[in-house]
Image (cartoon, rainbow, N blue to C red; front, side):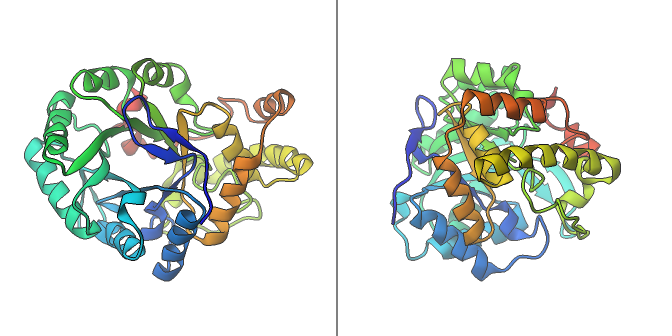
Length: 334
């Protein structure tokens, strides 16, 4: 096993590797998956020195947590930082049913997650989205009770705005805010990121590769299956995708001059934005994880950062990051 550089999540959170592994894509969000390959990817991440694994109780309706449990069954649990999202309601047809962050629901979700993961505690527990019917103070307070009881170590949040972040932090220390952040999703820079830094809260950034857009995987043209999340995302449809791939081509030219891949350049850019920002990489195969880890060796010069900014301006991306109905429930977008 090798060792990656680490950083502390905020003022109060655990120490984690500079890259974390996001397991969501291992449960069908981007089309068919293979459990054996997924487990191999988790093992590859751990063997590289990564210790942060992010999952959610609604990913594959429990499949993802069970998969993580299997992958960790022969590993030292205490060497892994498990981050778990809860609260999203799904139907048996995979339909969306909103979110539930009532205190009694939190205790129920937590009990099931502990069982599926085969552990007696979760390192970072967070609501997947803000529940508009429950004050954030009540949600954080209920998780804080689970911290006191020993079932949770730290509290995180996901996709909330600056005001919600302040209200939550007034109830209990918040380790990190998990939110989308990449070259083409930079909305947090105006208010959310400065507020998090003021409060001593880290950012765990997902969507660093914008679901494969900021890589070589779509440049040759790929037909997305109906079960692939991207088939319903505005950024991957019609003229939007055509326009966005032009941005990727411009980024690819910079990557080629540096001798790295587009994905590595995109990861290196996020890493360059501060040690309080930890990219969560959704690698589903060992080779994709190895590609991501290599980005840790890239040190971008001021000239390269300027060239990247010119090639991919902050507002140049075409299409929202989610479909309209999903964008409407994001507290971070209000």
